[in-house]
Image 1 (cartoon, helix red, strand yellow):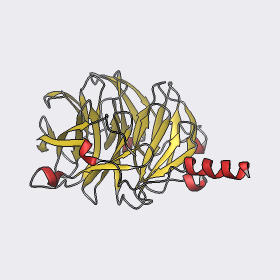
Image 2 (cartoon, rainbow, N blue to C red):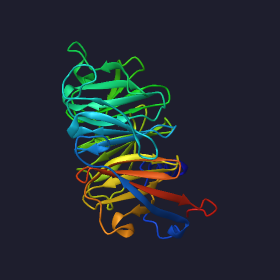
Image 3 (tube, helix red, strand yellow):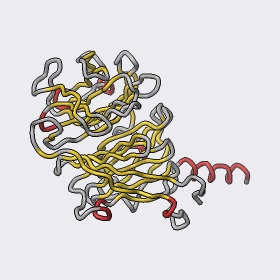
Image 4 (cartoon, rainbow, N blue to C red):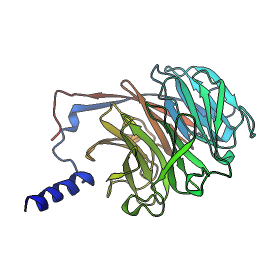
Length: 316
């Protein structure tokens, strides 16, 4: 009997059951709209269907300006610093840079989709290296079309492969080590992945547009949980917030949902609540200190919000 009870508890923990929160006092979370940056164009602080945003620990913001085939670097106040890119397949060139990760504070890793590679730059956008797989690499470790890239605190590179529908893990030298979440992964299989994020170098969360959930894995590729079932419709951009929460953009519902890591829905950001307009297509999100930055692909701008958690109140 103890074994059966223990197994049931393990299953309940392992699959992160989603609890719709009626007991969380949302009045303890205060979200305020601050401003917006950007517009459609090719100049500084202008975008053409941007698809990725990331912020460094020191507060610099990096944008995957996908339609303009470049990366832009901004200050936390929204001032232009530098750009790199242009269409092509050489160094400092891109063919659909769809996402990026600047969270380690030293490097900026870019998912260069149609060039089948991950590009590494330093924080000042100086080119450092390219990572791709050669023909002699086994098929289950090949990198096809990278949708997203995340770096762990140990320097491991996680690539979300939109061609092979799986996650590829590379070591610090860029050598492929492991693939997971592909067709034979059972309940942990991805169907239509969007983006991903690493939390505390222990867990990896991936948005799945077909399953309409966030899929959780440990960094060894073991499936842990799903989040957002029955709530999410088109989950795409995803980022960690304050170590304890996940922010998820949903571009069908045109909102940003905030969950805790147990799967509870905590609150949501609806732009229409703060301004006269809704989000058009919120595709990515990131945060720095108490600010949240939401990237809108078709509006070609970044919306900035202030969030305050009253941590003196517990979530039940």
